[in-house]
Length: 173
Image (cartoon, rainbow, N blue to C red):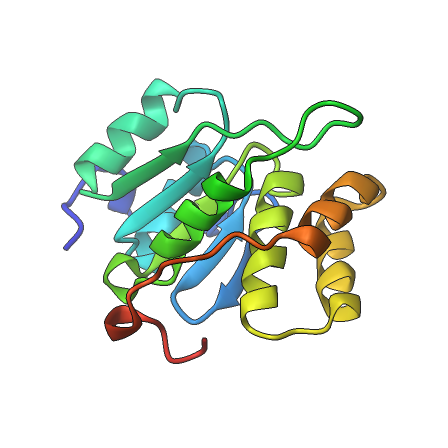
Protein backbone atom coordinates (compact mmCIF):
# COMPACT_ATOMS: atom_id res chain seq x y z
CA UNK A 1 0.00 0.00 0.00
CA UNK A 2 1.35 3.41 -0.96
CA UNK A 3 2.35 5.71 1.86
CA UNK A 4 0.95 9.20 2.21
CA UNK A 5 3.33 11.81 0.87
CA UNK A 6 3.53 15.37 -0.36
CA UNK A 7 2.42 14.15 -3.81
CA UNK A 8 -0.99 12.86 -2.74
CA UNK A 9 -2.63 16.27 -2.67
CA UNK A 10 -5.50 16.48 -5.13
CA UNK A 11 -4.08 17.80 -8.35
CA UNK A 12 -6.34 19.92 -10.53
CA UNK A 13 -5.07 18.11 -13.61
CA UNK A 14 -3.49 14.67 -13.61
CA UNK A 15 -0.48 14.56 -15.92
CA UNK A 16 0.64 11.14 -17.17
CA UNK A 17 4.28 10.62 -18.15
CA UNK A 18 5.41 11.11 -21.74
CA UNK A 19 4.14 8.33 -24.07
CA UNK A 20 2.02 6.79 -21.32
CA UNK A 21 -0.30 3.93 -22.31
CA UNK A 22 -1.84 0.78 -20.90
CA UNK A 23 -0.20 -2.33 -22.39
CA UNK A 24 -2.54 -4.81 -20.70
CA UNK A 25 -4.51 -4.84 -17.44
CA UNK A 26 -1.99 -4.03 -14.69
CA UNK A 27 0.83 -3.17 -17.13
CA UNK A 28 1.67 0.38 -18.27
CA UNK A 29 4.41 1.94 -20.39
CA UNK A 30 5.88 5.44 -20.53
CA UNK A 31 8.86 7.69 -20.81
CA UNK A 32 10.79 8.71 -17.68
CA UNK A 33 8.35 10.12 -15.09
CA UNK A 34 9.01 13.48 -13.50
CA UNK A 35 7.65 15.24 -10.41
CA UNK A 36 4.63 16.56 -12.33
CA UNK A 37 3.60 12.93 -13.00
CA UNK A 38 3.81 11.69 -9.40
CA UNK A 39 0.14 12.32 -8.44
CA UNK A 40 -0.92 10.40 -11.57
CA UNK A 41 1.40 7.50 -10.70
CA UNK A 42 0.01 7.36 -7.16
CA UNK A 43 -3.48 6.85 -8.63
CA UNK A 44 -2.17 3.78 -10.49
CA UNK A 45 -1.21 2.15 -7.18
CA UNK A 46 2.04 0.82 -8.62
CA UNK A 47 3.74 -2.12 -6.95
CA UNK A 48 6.76 -2.01 -9.23
CA UNK A 49 8.62 -0.16 -11.94
CA UNK A 50 10.77 -1.74 -14.63
CA UNK A 51 13.37 0.77 -15.81
CA UNK A 52 15.26 0.08 -19.04
CA UNK A 53 18.18 2.49 -19.23
CA UNK A 54 21.89 2.64 -18.59
CA UNK A 55 21.22 5.89 -16.68
CA UNK A 56 20.60 5.97 -12.93
CA UNK A 57 17.27 7.13 -11.53
CA UNK A 58 17.27 10.81 -10.73
CA UNK A 59 17.17 11.62 -7.00
CA UNK A 60 13.59 12.92 -7.14
CA UNK A 61 12.22 9.71 -8.67
CA UNK A 62 14.33 7.59 -6.34
CA UNK A 63 12.85 9.42 -3.34
CA UNK A 64 9.33 9.02 -4.76
CA UNK A 65 9.59 5.24 -5.26
CA UNK A 66 11.06 4.85 -1.77
CA UNK A 67 8.23 6.88 -0.20
CA UNK A 68 5.60 4.96 -2.17
CA UNK A 69 7.27 1.58 -1.46
CA UNK A 70 7.46 0.78 -5.18
CA UNK A 71 9.91 -1.98 -6.07
CA UNK A 72 12.28 -1.05 -8.91
CA UNK A 73 13.77 -3.53 -11.38
CA UNK A 74 16.54 -1.68 -13.23
CA UNK A 75 17.91 -3.20 -16.42
CA UNK A 76 20.93 -1.28 -17.69
CA UNK A 77 20.04 -1.45 -21.36
CA UNK A 78 21.24 0.77 -24.17
CA UNK A 79 19.08 0.90 -27.28
CA UNK A 80 19.77 -0.81 -30.60
CA UNK A 81 22.15 1.28 -32.68
CA UNK A 82 23.28 -0.01 -36.02
CA UNK A 83 25.68 -1.47 -36.87
CA UNK A 84 27.29 -2.56 -33.59
CA UNK A 85 25.04 -2.01 -30.57
CA UNK A 86 22.22 -4.40 -29.90
CA UNK A 87 20.01 -5.03 -26.90
CA UNK A 88 20.81 -8.35 -25.24
CA UNK A 89 17.95 -10.85 -25.63
CA UNK A 90 18.63 -12.19 -22.13
CA UNK A 91 17.95 -8.72 -20.65
CA UNK A 92 14.59 -8.50 -22.41
CA UNK A 93 13.76 -12.06 -21.33
CA UNK A 94 14.61 -11.23 -17.71
CA UNK A 95 12.46 -8.08 -17.80
CA UNK A 96 9.58 -10.06 -19.37
CA UNK A 97 9.72 -12.52 -16.46
CA UNK A 98 8.97 -9.55 -14.15
CA UNK A 99 6.17 -8.28 -16.44
CA UNK A 100 4.60 -11.75 -16.55
CA UNK A 101 4.38 -12.09 -12.76
CA UNK A 102 1.12 -10.65 -11.41
CA UNK A 103 2.74 -10.21 -8.00
CA UNK A 104 4.55 -7.23 -9.58
CA UNK A 105 1.33 -5.64 -10.92
CA UNK A 106 0.43 -2.89 -11.33
CA UNK A 107 3.76 -2.26 -13.04
CA UNK A 108 5.09 0.69 -15.03
CA UNK A 109 7.72 -0.09 -17.65
CA UNK A 110 9.72 2.94 -18.71
CA UNK A 111 12.88 4.14 -20.39
CA UNK A 112 13.86 7.74 -21.13
CA UNK A 113 11.33 8.62 -23.86
CA UNK A 114 9.08 5.53 -23.80
CA UNK A 115 9.82 4.70 -27.43
CA UNK A 116 12.57 2.33 -28.53
CA UNK A 117 13.72 0.14 -25.62
CA UNK A 118 10.16 -0.10 -24.32
CA UNK A 119 9.00 -0.76 -27.88
CA UNK A 120 11.37 -3.71 -28.13
CA UNK A 121 10.22 -5.13 -24.79
CA UNK A 122 6.53 -4.70 -25.62
CA UNK A 123 7.08 -6.11 -29.13
CA UNK A 124 8.59 -9.25 -27.59
CA UNK A 125 5.69 -9.43 -25.13
CA UNK A 126 3.28 -9.25 -28.07
CA UNK A 127 5.12 -12.18 -29.69
CA UNK A 128 4.46 -14.20 -26.52
CA UNK A 129 0.80 -13.17 -26.84
CA UNK A 130 0.84 -14.53 -30.43
CA UNK A 131 0.19 -11.17 -32.12
CA UNK A 132 0.96 -10.95 -35.84
CA UNK A 133 4.23 -9.21 -36.74
CA UNK A 134 2.23 -6.59 -38.68
CA UNK A 135 0.26 -5.68 -35.54
CA UNK A 136 3.40 -5.67 -33.40
CA UNK A 137 5.19 -3.31 -35.78
CA UNK A 138 2.13 -1.04 -36.09
CA UNK A 139 2.04 -0.65 -32.32
CA UNK A 140 5.81 -0.10 -32.19
CA UNK A 141 5.66 2.69 -34.80
CA UNK A 142 2.80 4.48 -32.97
CA UNK A 143 5.23 5.20 -30.15
CA UNK A 144 8.65 5.17 -31.82
CA UNK A 145 8.03 7.06 -35.03
CA UNK A 146 10.64 6.68 -37.74
CA UNK A 147 13.55 4.81 -36.06
CA UNK A 148 12.33 1.31 -36.66
CA UNK A 149 14.60 -1.00 -38.63
CA UNK A 150 17.08 -2.22 -35.97
CA UNK A 151 14.35 -2.54 -33.35
CA UNK A 152 11.96 -4.34 -35.70
CA UNK A 153 14.74 -6.79 -36.59
CA UNK A 154 15.39 -7.34 -32.89
CA UNK A 155 11.71 -8.06 -32.22
CA UNK A 156 11.46 -10.34 -35.24
CA UNK A 157 14.45 -12.50 -34.31
CA UNK A 158 13.82 -12.50 -30.54
CA UNK A 159 13.92 -16.15 -29.54
CA UNK A 160 15.21 -16.14 -25.97
CA UNK A 161 13.32 -18.42 -23.59
CA UNK A 162 11.22 -16.46 -21.08
CA UNK A 163 11.10 -18.65 -17.94
CA UNK A 164 8.07 -17.08 -16.25
CA UNK A 165 6.20 -18.91 -13.47
CA UNK A 166 2.87 -20.19 -14.89
CA UNK A 167 1.34 -20.00 -11.41
CA UNK A 168 1.65 -16.21 -11.43
CA UNK A 169 1.12 -15.45 -15.13
CA UNK A 170 -1.49 -12.82 -15.99
CA UNK A 171 -4.84 -13.94 -17.41
CA UNK A 172 -4.23 -12.01 -20.64
CA UNK A 173 -1.20 -14.14 -21.63
